[in-house]
Length: 326
Ligand SMILES: NC(=O)c1ccc[n+]([C@@H]2O[C@H](COP(=O)([O-])OP(=O)(O)OC[C@H]3O[C@@H](n4cnc5c(N)ncnc54)[C@H](OP(=O)(O)O)[C@@H]3O)[C@@H](O)[C@H]2O)c1
Image (tube, rainbow, N blue to C red; front, top):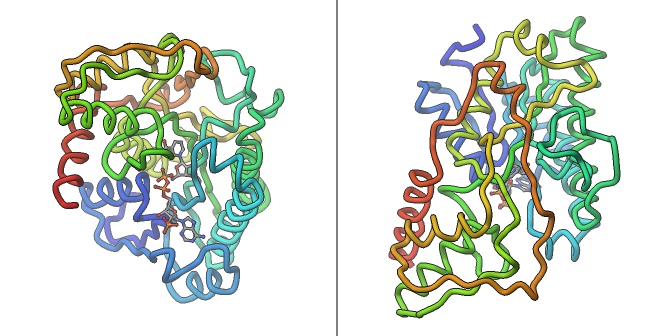
């Protein structure tokens, strides 16, 4: 039954970067009964609308990839919206899923749930051991509440109702569906855009903020989707062997990190930019390192398939196609 391809699966956030990749992965595996609603059709902060949706549709499984997400600027400027909307979306979806009899749900979190000074690489047991990064604390608190909500429903209703709600914590993702906005995008899409524009304009130099020495980890979004479906499908005995009732989340990372300077070289190569790359050390670097410990996931039998070179080539290909369509 677990992999029955006719099961009705609701993907919340199916137009987002991760949600759309989960749809691609489920379709690739042959699932035929996927359901979605756009934000406009169903505002997930609206409790009554979410209740009506679940009562009518009664899905078998739910992937919760809808969230209000943003960079440092957005998190700092709209902290009330970040905590309110994320808590509402996840409370409504998780609770109404339970009320309508959903046994299997996967909640998407983020690596920002871990303390700012967590030992590197960050393992699952670092959760709630220290202070969070202040800029995205409201968002992180909502994500931590989501993990704890899944765990609490499992603990209270696991035996009586067969509830099995799981959580995954992705590292930095990139690939199709990414946000290439000039002022509000993550490092990979921002650099793809800058190197592409420098190539087109024949600019001799691209200057990158900071020293180029901080290390970061990146995972291609289709790998994230494959890991999400893998974890959803895992036999409960295997899942429970690697998790604990009150520490059940699973990190999803690439397993190794690279410096920003190495990343810039790789993006220059992917985009075909041949000018100079320089660094501006007067600008802030951020944390020296942020790497997830993904051993729990590796022990369960999953590892990523798409390396950085291949992933960047695919991401750049999509970026060029998007530009051509404009
Ligand atoms: N991208 C990353 O690098 C990354 C890394 C770690 C974790 N994650 C996690 O992965 C999840 C998905 O992220 P993403 O990058 O795919 O974000 P995304 O591209 O912004 O997608 C989020 C989706 O959720 C929808 N949504 C937001 N609020 C909604 C509401 N009130 N009602 C209905 N739909 C709503 C959005 O629709 P609209 O656009 O129409 O509002 C959008 O389609 C998030 O939980 C995020 O924390 C992402």
